[in-house]
Length: 383
Image (cartoon, one colour):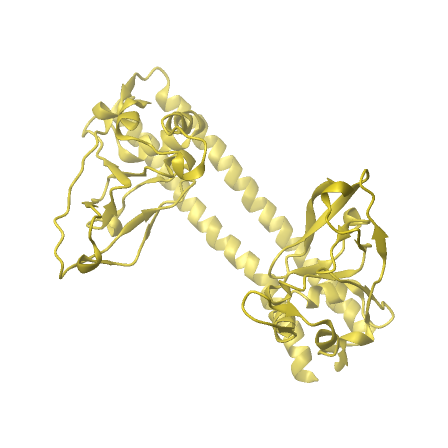
């Protein structure tokens, strides 16, 4: 049976300050959100640190961000961050291991209940919300016996190791599939001629005449080859200078401001009839000469993406625009259509396998949160 205990019974604020020396190098810490722990932010010389003194973090301490505690920004300091410096917005607390096992508290701190506790201990206006230490330390948490804490830790660690193994296996299978696809693709394009886009997939624009009383379902394209997404409908009455263009299934759709980072996709059945702004370029593969999926794969691979990036000049993010002329100058390999279709079938099977792995990965990642809820919510209810 768990009892409840105030946090100040086992957490004591550290006052281990150090004077910052301008010529010395210091590690700095980033507290990731939603209970994902602490990581190295980087190393800087003391001259780059504004404060004359800072907290010195020690392994096993609990570090928390006053500003983002309500978003789960905290964690146990790992050994590799020993001696890292943090400002007074990141108080460090020593854990009384005779009352609470540090690793047990680390697991508990990853629960939605603890994050909610931090939210309730935070006060302030929208831009100045801070965790109030005094309020935080007087919050109560469920606390089983030390023996029970050890059993819980062993159980969670065992399952976490299995989850890691499964995650690693999924990632390895994904890498192997991608390597096999690339090998098959190289086989498919071996000896194939390069042709410019106007021959293989010419630009096709379908201007939409705006009706003020109509609405238009808008399409977007994600970066890094992650496909299309659907934006909220546009109202004709809200459109003034904007031009819209119709998208049809099978189009190769390019975002001209993000194509350099892989923001182009093949429009699917659910995308048919949607519209894109003038920022979206649509190309239609020449029947019998090329398939949309084959062109897409080439342009997402390193060689093809390099061509897209070269055709998107500029140094800053939104200044890297893919112009129509530059797009039309890109050349792509065009093996016989039967060979392209063979590869497309192989790619489709790989996508199916990827979908299954993604679903499995979601189930695996959900296991630990479900166990945390079962274990710690049960302890709180028992109390």
